Length: 297
Image 1: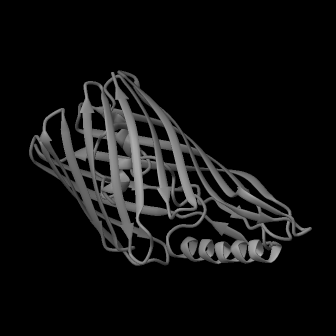
Image 2 (image 1 turned 45 degrees about the horizontal axis):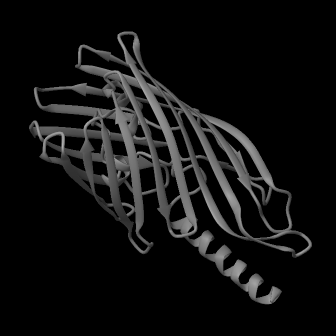
């Protein structure tokens, strides 16, 4: 019986290692932002409140008064993520607070080879504090301060529990009547985390993104995005967001070059409540499902 469970555990460990190398490392995926995720993060120049602060913190300027959302995402069957966020807009600037959690569930074997089923093998918790200013609807700036907590359970080593912090900055400007330009830089602190397997340090992803958004109609948003991560190819993304029925139902989609990603989703409005569902897929990896509830007042 133990042999079967150990085999199951090691198969899972191999699977987890493979997808982490192909898709994201620690804190590369911050939960929530369902609309932005489904639009493959090609939203650098879109202002839509706290839902987009992972891409560009200047997006916090899109909050009118109060905004609240919760989300759940299923990533690759064993990996789950949840988030809860709230924002407040005022004449002195907009504030946002978001809590995100990503966790991997599987069987764990301790140093005595005792198997614990359906336990959390890795948990990543992120608290984001966001502040942004809007200068006459023409220039919007924002910043995130992110507090990161990493908890890992690994075979034959002491559990790895550490706290880190990073910061992001961003700006969105209105360049013509229907044109917007945005730029953002994540992890300007160049934060590194300690490896639980050896004495090496791993630097968290630092990404520079630029975007251009065009609104040909009030109900249609198109956006082009280019981003660069050190040692990786330049990535290009394109997204659209279309209101089929204003304040009732909208659809959105996105396509990115690296990693090859496609997303399709919709938003249903029920007065001040909105429901988002998104489906996204990354080349050679299982598809992802995202759902979010938002309330604006």
